[in-house]
Image 1 (cartoon, rainbow, N blue to C red):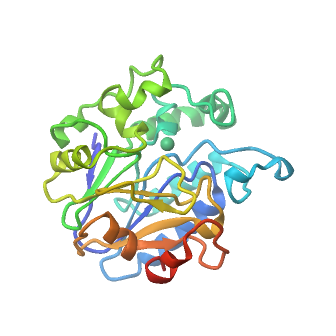
Image 2 (cartoon, helix red, strand yellow):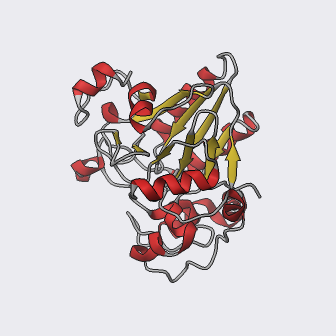
Length: 293
Ligand SMILES: [Mn+2]
């Protein structure tokens, strides 16, 4: 088992967050990644979890807070994600999110259905469910690029850990009856998958425990309608898809040999619009002209 993936020191790093069953946005991430593979040094893709569990709501009932309309199809996203990883061995990393965890030992999540994992497993059927559970069980929790100073994970870096070796030993199960509001404070895995923010001190302690060269934590889990948020250093929360309007969706594109100075540095030089021609609704236009390409 490899719960902490160490990324290469050259090439292009692409990071996308919470897709939540959005096939169109997954295809866009896939296209960006496959184009970047042709660049010198190639490319690696990190998706920081929550690929699955999206809304299945009619367009006429679609609420504004969910951003641009889409029909959640987690089965198709999972199948395409699996195929993409098969096509590019060692270059595509899906990190565990709290929504994937619900299939392999995590607490029940109920965003659009009372039991999201059961809904998806009903659609998958027993044979594919078994394959999907085995696959998801092997997903890493964290990806690090020590030379670049970047650490990717699903949620804010709030977990108290001593080392990467400790992360390797964290069990997936034992959470079934834990109330969701307690997950972020119930041990390291709960924090890794559920924390919405943390302090500068605790974030830096987390990064240092993994590798003293790490400077910035890149994660999703929360919806940021403007595409990204820096609560404080070293935290960079990015929204690539879920809950956003198309023109506000962002992903990270970073040269793995380029050392990041801070979360603000990564935001200003590394964030890219997922749909460059779509109109911005919430994103600050002053940021788009200076930083976001
Ligand atoms: Mn999440």
